[in-house]
Length: 334
Image (tube, rainbow, N blue to C red; front, side):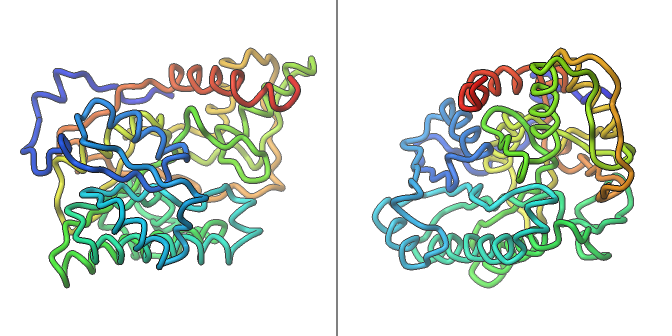
């Protein structure tokens, strides 16, 4: 149940060549209001960028190619982080397959096409670990892509993300563009989505556990058997990794971003209950779907690039719960 924690000394010992300094650059974080995008904006504050550009949703719809191109021509970004996406959990993916496929395809295509046309120097496309086959060998290496069937419950999102990373490769091969892709594992942290109809596992468990504690209940109900294994990474660690990749990586292949360790959903539920202060047992429901049996990504490539996570899971869960209590609970009337 432990996460891998790196140190500054270990990171410095393996520091690779600086290929693309961000200092003095105009950097656009597409999707800056999302959990990952806002974390990237926080992380870029220490990079000395000339400007960190943020396009409000009301100002430019990333699904509109003309609007995206016009905005980029006007604002002239030199580097782009594509963190914008329609995201959600199993229920949301299953309920809105067209939205998940179409919106994410359009975002990737429009931003990359415009980046090519205005001469963006470097672009990082953000994918997801769900791109890999449901029964991929564990831990999942980057080479496992397209070697087997996807998990059906989130295939729409996965297909769109696979298309996005392949599009980045295509621009690189056909036009010589320095477009790269990174595939984060399951993320959590401040700014997460706590809507039970569309959230991922950690915010869903945290909201349910908090509600149970406030109601004076004991125990926590979870979907499935609790036996599937998942890997988790705090969003601030993810942002640090993405900035590191932008500065030090320039290859055709996508690169995994993860903690390198995993745990069962049952173990996770107990950890969340401890942080929230909810007592009792975890009650499983085997009639509900488990999803992919295990999803642990290989961290070999990003470790070789000199990056390690620094936020332990229990510390990260506590940080997330503080944010939840400050920003979400008041809106729920708590």
